[in-house]
Image (cartoon, rainbow, N blue to C red; front, side):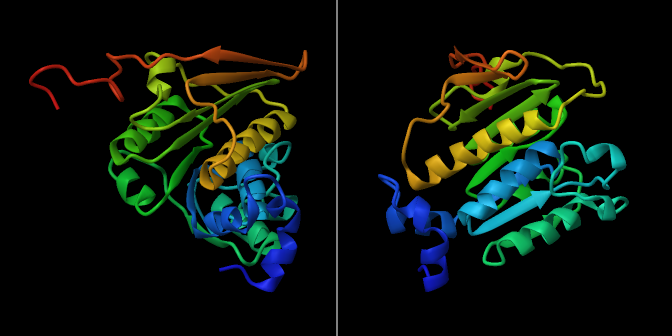
Length: 248
């Protein structure tokens, strides 16, 4: 499935143990859904495109603003006022023309989320609000699609991987709603977490390494520490737990 240009382009990663040409072909066949084209989405999409994932479906409804440019690396000053998905697609197409980019200008809602993720192998959570994260988490579990969570606040970031039916999910970790507020963030934080999300996606698709399954990884950039918390599956979780008798 790989042409000569692809074999040359991805030569350095195909020599990795457990990767090889078969691993690269798995990446090429994959379709990854990226929810959000902001800081996390920019970083994760950049490295998934560079790695040769066959198709990225990026969904976002916002326009580029000047205040985005400290962290959303796919958007440049010339893109201010443009739709983020179009701006992201333009840069990713230049970066790797062999990767198909599907840019969808929509807000993710309960009414459209199932249609939006249809046909995707994985979901990358690059959102900035908990209600949409919950919606994506629930949809991933219902449709049996692996879900890669990432979140940032200031110099801190978090990441975890959810394998439906096997691991704890996002709702097992976060209980209830969190008040909406403007999120302070330094640009390097979504770069770190977005790269971790992309790493998890690549590992899952190729079938190598140990995932952040039942583990929440917390990054503290100010003190340059990574801390890991074990997460247990909640049997009463409203998303992944067993439904009560008489309920579905």
